[in-house]
Length: 458
Image 1 (tube, helix red, strand yellow):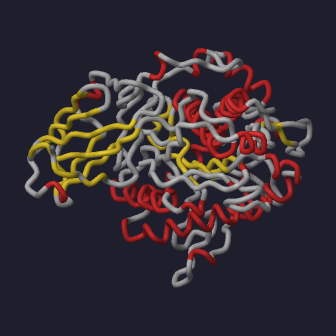
Image 2 (cartoon, one colour; image 1 turned 120 degrees about the horizontal axis):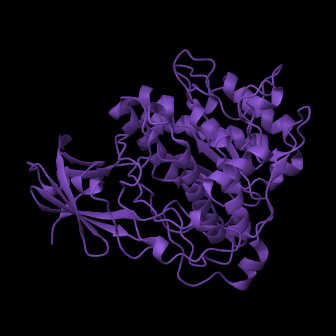
Image 3 (cartoon, rainbow, N blue to C red; image 1 turned 90 degrees about the vertical axis):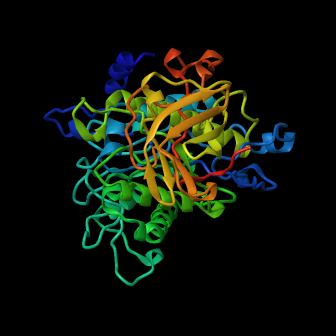
């Protein structure tokens, strides 16, 4: 189904376009880090740290029988700020759930929003403004996760108190009511996970000194969501959580670094069962070409497809029959080497692609950062070397290799649609029944959450 056809279908199913009716305001909707695989004796308890690849051999028959296909429905809780709301508005939830259903072989998720004249929406999300007195919604524009003095945020910042004890603000309480009062016990049991796409205000307002606090606040927020579901982070009945690489937003490179560092801390903690489903967002455009605070509709729809692949990959790894040659989160940088003071070589681990690709614009070095003893060195060019290596040319570094660090879209850079380094998966893609040609595409190189320290060249 092409995007134009999708728009028509999604809008017929999911109200969300401007109208004068009560229904008009609605539309329901959803660097990778490596680590050792954690496996339980039952499929329900199997998880892999973000970025990990499964063993080459398929799981044994007992695991496959115990956990496949997943017992839930093809749908996730989608929560966040205004871009999460636009993800719903633009049909992202419809697309993602369609993909999950086809990739996992399970039924699509729906729920009853209990609104006059509207009996069913795609699971599981609701934009603000539909339910009032009391408010119930999963997305709220302009609301940070937390901020000093902001009681309308998802969490209320309380100076001197451990974030693990913070209470929910207005937006958080509204989300909690949605989960406990609008969703049924069956909905909460069948939900595949949490898709938390919420970084905008925090990317502008946070600083590196806030990293530990922000990471703790993320844990608290996701923990409160899981408490409302009545499901744990890991083990039987676990509720996985997924996020995205912060979108280009605001004018604070330090804020982007801080939010990425906090996300990296949570991703690296296996007890959190949290990973990025959309690990690259810099290859996108401002909404309608001029709204830099929001991503354009075609990009949000593409993010939905990428998320479906990454989430299905994780679901198949944790409790299913293996990968079936399907992509996951995409290629990632695995190694950086200082070749000379003015060149750095990167090695990329492929997902399901075989070679790297780059547009002419991408070869000018956009999106890349080289830090020399903490000081930025301008990147002047990027070259692809063989199937899995990238050579960066940059201003000379003065420090040794161990004082050099590399980032890709680390500071919130927008490289633009089609201008990220990608793999070539589209040339080899074999799609499952139910997915059309718009599900065949090349995957972008994952953005880095933390700078990658370079080693000595060989």
